[in-house]
Image 1: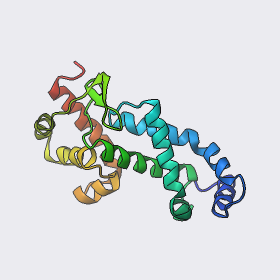
Image 2: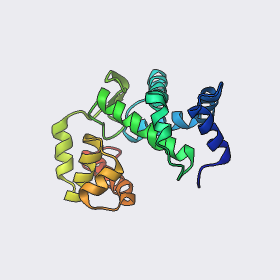
Image 3: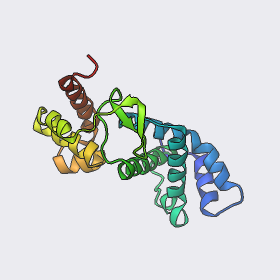
Image 4: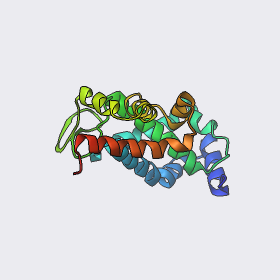
Length: 190
């Protein structure tokens, strides 16, 4: 799906700094950004508080505003604006999560820290790097490499694909299988 006429006009209005354009932009995409934040934090097993969501939402929209809308100026219109913003939002959230709390828990049933590294007593987190490395050692090399690159180094699917020579659309399913193997090896969810 390409760029819709509504989004094309909204984008044009924002880049031309028309009155009310930014407010319309935020109104149109706020729900999408919040959804991406929830999904990204959940997929990285990081507990989301209302403050986390508010702060990360602000970070995403600030990234769009930076350098005179540079992010929007780089949009080529080859996809929908929503698809493009989903990728932008996910990258901002992952970068912020890694900056604030570099270790990603393996499972939400273990103690988790919020995006700012504060302990969250409601959920436990597997925080012992030696244990993570032990679990990774139990995986076949390609799976361990992909898990390490994604969860510990914060690489994107595209970066992982280039580095390990695997199709980009195979990364997600491989990560899911590897996580399940690690959960079973750790005795989580039994």
